[in-house]
Image (cartoon, rainbow, N blue to C red; front, side, top):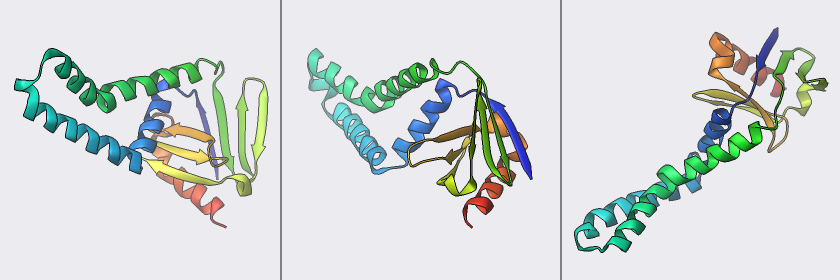
Amino acid sequence: MKYIFNYRTTAFDLWQLSMYGIYGSMVGVCNLVFTVAMVLLSGRFWGEANSFIKVLLIMGISLFTVIQPVAIYRRGKKQVSTIHHDTEIVFNDYGVQVKSGGQNSHLEWSAIKGVSKKPTMIIVFSSNKHGFILTNKVLGKEKEALYNYILSKTQK
């Protein structure tokens, strides 16, 4: 089998990856509990609160619903600004070949640490913290087939 994909990682892709990471962990649960508590506190004390307290309540509600996602998107935008070339990634029986700009690299299947399937993307990990994001837009109808292929090659 051989799969070839050309893509450029976007700030939105990195934002989605970060949000999956946050809300798929205990940190996300804490964020949700905090936000629900702030909504309940706001509902309970809004009528009695002065303007300063109302601003604090609104900021508390906005912290994980608006401020954090915007900050993560801005960080992703900064990271993406350093990427000036499209990436071509090839998955075949010999491993994974990556071409970006004038650079080529080859990863043996034994070097692939894992693969994760999310609703809007597949992440192929080349280390515990680094990998390749392939979105549904890039993968098209080949998402399931590629995921199963990578699993078959990495679980030997």
